[in-house]
Length: 281
Image (cartoon, rainbow, N blue to C red; front, side, top):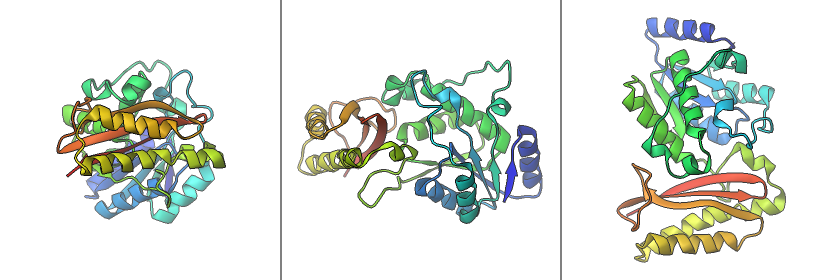
């Protein structure tokens, strides 16, 4: 496995692979890898000749009061896991390499960022869009793999790729979960045992919404109120948002249709967790 630390070296390597007729799959990560990341890598590995993984904690997608400095990091563990899965190249740039002095460009995707985490974390998706656009230009992949756990991020990247005519296939992979149903996340490590149990309210909320839908409930307000009551009944929880929205536009809906996205963001203790499920026939 090759470790590349500079933009110039990564671009040169990718160009050589393309000239040799090799296809490149790309999995961008912020490190502290878990089984969810590894599944993305396996999917990428199965669809291309060369798998490139990036490890970069992107400062531009963290708000002023968010956890950039506290975000977990495990460089040696990450490299070992990437190697075990069969990654061919790990792009591991320093902050100064990605954002040199004088950097001043922003990439903004508009309508699909207005709701959900876009409301709760102003500017977050501008940071996501700019770093992913940069990574796409550096790695030059034929396809890029993202998890559906962050459904809005996947939507934003898909929209940006289409709007800017980037010749990259975006592949979404279903959320990988712990045995008890909690979505795998690097932030799960912050939860103490009692909070970890309360965090299961996210999965229970999605199960409740599915049950209500199967029993004929279509009123979004009724479903949302039932979910909020369930979450608030668990200790250490504080709701950021519970949204039932159109799965394409991410705009809130009054009634559940053939396919509705249930998206959740809940603080459990000091840890903000997100999850989602498509509620459909």
